[in-house]
Image (cartoon, rainbow, N blue to C red; front, side, top):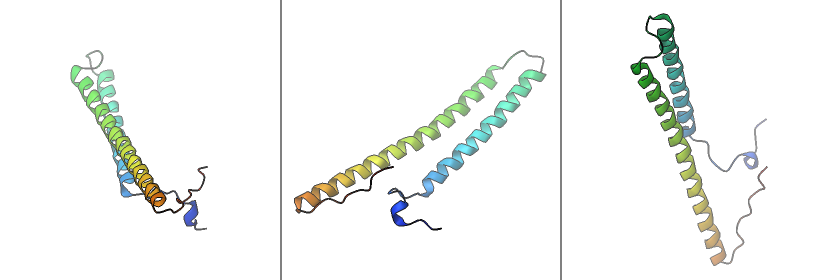
Length: 108
């Protein structure tokens, strides 16, 4: 059953969300493969523990994850702030013209 326009969220779902999800999945997969390879090397070679190079690879991988998530969350915050500014500007303009500002449906 198709949804009506009133049941949709006010934020359009764009390709940016999918790009962020695909990047996150790709990085998570790469980190898992790297971790398995590094742990395999640490377990089955004569040197005890993780080497310095393995530690640097792990740090770089988690820095990449943090960068992608930070960029996505920061972009969403900027987008929401811009929407609020636009709504506030529209409400001020409506009041200046003597019109009633549009009522938003309650958030559930």
